[in-house]
Length: 136
Image 1 (cartoon, rainbow, N blue to C red):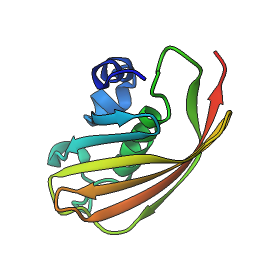
Image 2 (cartoon, rainbow, N blue to C red):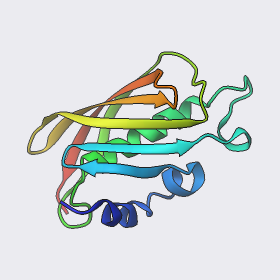
Image 3 (cartoon, rainbow, N blue to C red):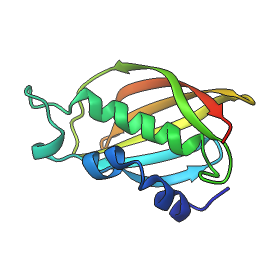
Image 4 (cartoon, helix red, strand yellow):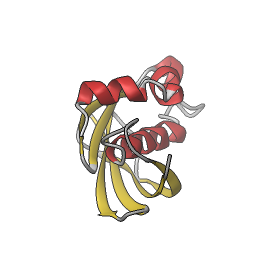
C-alpha cells in the first residue's frame, strides 16, 4: 500500500476533486479513506445558501477512489460503476469530511459505504458505491 503522501501525489491528477472543488486526502488505508473540505461561500454553495449536493457526492466519490485504490498507479484501477446518495440534512459547519469504507472487496467488483459529516459531527449524507476493477 502507498503512503498517504504518495496517494495525494497520484490523486492530484483528479483535478475536479482537488483543484476545482478543493478536497484533500486526510487518511488512507486498504479499503478506507477520509477526505476533507473547507467550505467556501463563494465556491460550494447553491442558490438556497446551502452546500451544493454535488459537493457531497464529489467528496464521497473521491474518498471511494482513494479507498479502493491503495496502490494507485501500480496495479489495475477501480472505478465507480454505480452509486446512490441520500441527503439527510444541511451541513451547518464550515468543514466537511467524507469517510469511505469497504463493505465487500471482490476480485473485480467491490461495494463501499461513505458518510459525509460536518465539523459538528452531523451526518449530512450517505453514499453507497459499487466499483469495478479494470485491468491495465
